[in-house]
Image (cartoon, rainbow, N blue to C red; front, side):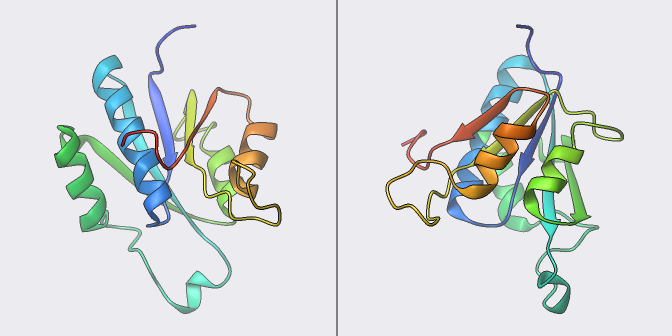
Length: 139
């Protein structure tokens, strides 16, 4: 397997997605890959705008700087839809990701299961490698 050239990572502001961001940034630094952070605006978010589509959240930029990643090279994309669909679309143009990275919440209907519903669905339907980052992977 070759090193990824373009990594898309899901972000919703949760600690699990922040862990996924860190993991993706460390891999990008090691492999010189591009990173696009993708945020999905579900049906309810339109009523309470949480993230600007034009400006990456300060917390995200702080994470990039903390990892030693040049925040100016971090791409921020906000798309309509559920998290799984938005991440899967990141495989195609204009992002063209050859790796998807997601955090694992694992707080679904079955306690004790590592994967949350979004990470499981992305892993089942992606056509590129998927990394599911557990919450304790960088502790």
